[in-house]
Image (cartoon, rainbow, N blue to C red; front, side, top):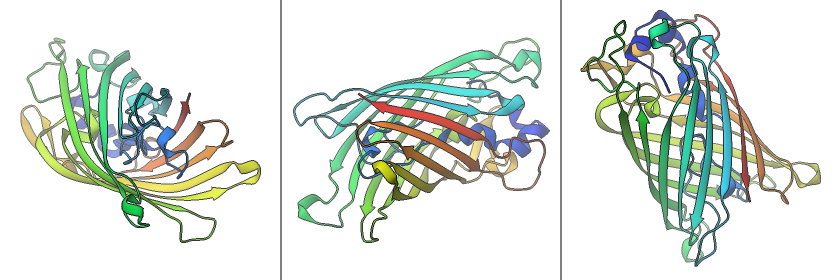
Length: 313
């Protein structure tokens, strides 16, 4: 991932930052398959925002791994993003995993800040504290806690000094999200289950690290709503939306810049998932993100399509 403070202050980025955030548009969950779906960063969940469910596993051991691949067309300004993930469940209540992110760099940034096929690493873990419908109830949501650690990004801007022309900007940056999340599937509507997901994360990352670091930790909310439809041959279509707050400030040149000045606002996603068959734990995801404040409309990076696959062995 190669996103600098220089990009933040460019005219193109100020109007098209949503291409950076588009990485989380791909995954929505069904009551039966949501524990088999990985998000862009690796946890079982929507895309970046996690669900309370964990990867499937037996009560006294490890489950089979779940793998995922995601691609985001960021356009000529920001380049394309890809991730490859593997996540493992344990004892029905835990999961942990690793994700490698690749960035095919920009074609429009200055040469000294344009990188190709660079990347960084992510590790994550999650623990389920309360199972859905615990105590033989019909209203208790599943509740989980977890963490996502991003590291080894040598150009992710963290506020330390760097220079452009002299190429003295290489550094190793990292940031962490800690979160609590609740998930509930409502079955009161005949033949159309509805999934509700809501959580709170403490983060020092701006735009999940794609836009650098925030000056410090802040509490940010997130949530998702999805409608599940059964199609012929027992296939499934899920239509839904996801929203996530972003930190109020971004650290740039050791100065806390208001995120509104960089057009970083609460992000909203509209997405669809297709599950071809309940016999095969394969999910095919597409989506689009609306994340601009509408102050400018330059280029075609405002809305970006993305594609993803998740498969559980």
